[in-house]
Length: 294
Image (tube, rainbow, N blue to C red):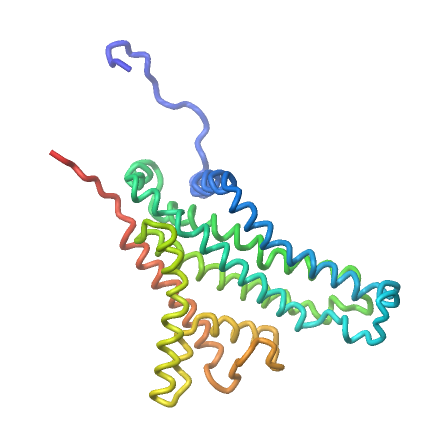
């Protein structure tokens, strides 16, 4: 608009509160994601196992169906610690696959098209930008991990008898905290990779490599040095260790978890260190730069 016409004026509408401003990025990111049919299909497939788990709970608490199925031992259909560990393992792996599809495109597009300076030139800090992108993965992965687990826990609490909820209420804590550290680690790794790698297929490969290569190096270190501390580089193993400790499971359901080896505080420390390192790598990349060609 020409300046001499003097028909322009400043925006007089309501402003988004500063504390929730980062949700603007989250909202538009979700709008773009749900335009993809493959993403919607992948999200549905990630939630489908919960329907089978819910059916199992219903059968385990219904004597009539058990008689029709000719189940004579109630222990075969018990809903205890092992049941929720299986749910956690299945849903966290589904979250990993979902993260590998969504994470690589959250930041790479903004950096490739030079949109970051436009974001940061507004009342929008780098912390707001990272929180907005992190909220996308946090909300998405929560929808397939701890939220369905708590819903299944509530379903079992409503159907079970003899005060089941009071004797198992402690399981809410490991469900939330184990899911939280897994979601945070996956999200920060994906955002860090997305900030440095432009192509989605390459970024997805890098995310897979970040889990398998360190684990292989750790096994080599254990074999050479005759120790078990190399397992600290196996992030999936560290998560299983935290899960086993949180649910007090020692039956071997989670695989070869060594209760005498790496302490649980070291497992927590490794996963937190991975989050801090990913955040540092992401911070190095997220700089508002303008290229001037003359």
